[in-house]
Amino acid sequence: MLTAAEIADRIATVRARIAAAARRSGRAADAITLVLASKTQPPEAVQAAYDAGARDFGENYVQEAGAKRAALGELHGARWHLIGHLQTNKAKLAVSIFDLIQSLDSARLAAALAKARRAPLVRALVEVNLGGEATKTGAAPGSLEELLAAARDQVEIAGLMTIPPPGDGPDASRRYFAELRAIRDRLAAHSGLALSELSMGMTDDFAIAIEEGATIVRVGRAIFGERTR
Image (cartoon, rainbow, N blue to C red; front, side):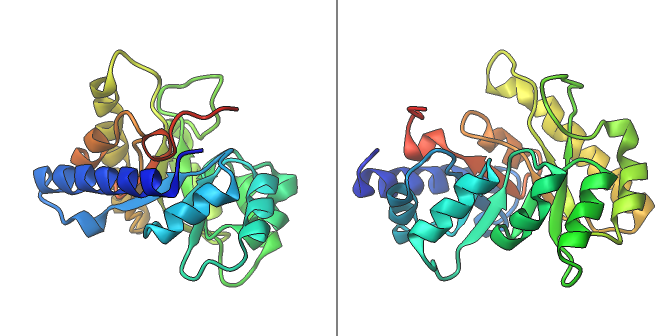
């Protein structure tokens, strides 16, 4: 684990890069939410990031996040994001832990979330599998209108999320980010939903994602260092 001072310095560096990318895209830095991808990180690393001013934390696994939150106690103002795949049988536990589910990918999951908590509606982003990768979850672009129609009364759909296919350098992601923004614009116009959030971009390409309209970026390695497991 990095020291608390190292984590604080890395957060400051990432925030400076976010601000620069926001300026390039004609937006304010505070229009971008930095989510720290804290998967596999010990509670002490999350605490150090919180003490350095971070407030949004992204976890991949429901049980790991629950254990981490229990170990940390109440972090006033902290918001927890599920950024990994969610199985329907873990929906009830997930809604007790996370403030935003970033990986909604089916009407069945939306129904499970609604059953787990009917009011207020669970906030969620629809995960879109833009590359059609068999190894990744997420809804196919062609299924999104049907999914939105089925899920809009079950959850609060705040926007879209994607993880682009691996490519040759960070700029290879740009076309996928632009595509997600275009899909969002089309869906918002047709559905009447604002879909104001676009969660896209990680350590290697978050600046490009911001240039293409990201409102949420998910950054782990640039802040916590390489994962050891």
